[in-house]
Image (cartoon, rainbow, N blue to C red; front, side, top):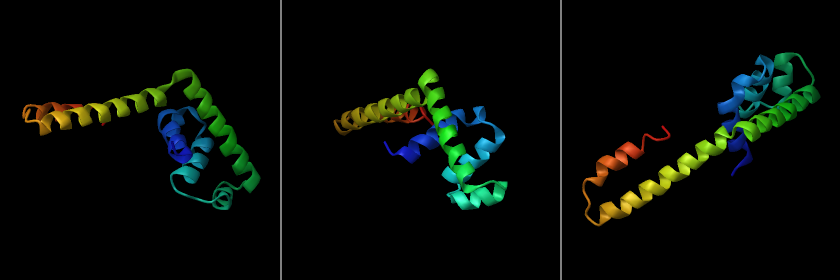
Length: 111
C-alpha cells in the first residue's frame, strides 16, 4: 500500500488525538501538499522543527494503530466488500437478477 495513502488513513482515524499544531502541520503536509518551508513559515518555526513534528506525529499515529487496529479493520472491510461485489457480479452474469438489490446494500458497508 502506498505510504502516503496509509498515513492519510491514519490521520483520518486518529488525527483528533494529535495536538492542534500537530494536526495543522500534518494536514498541511499530507492533505494540502504544502512544502516543509511553507509550513515552517506559516507556523513561525524552522523547517527542521516541521520535519521533526511530522516524524513524531507519524510515529504516534502508528502507535495508535498498533493498539486500536481501526485502519486495519477498515481495510479488511473494504477488501471484503470488493470480494462480495465481485462474487455478486459473477452471479448476476449467470442470471440471478435479485442480486442487484443485494449488491446495492453491500455498497453501503464502507461508505
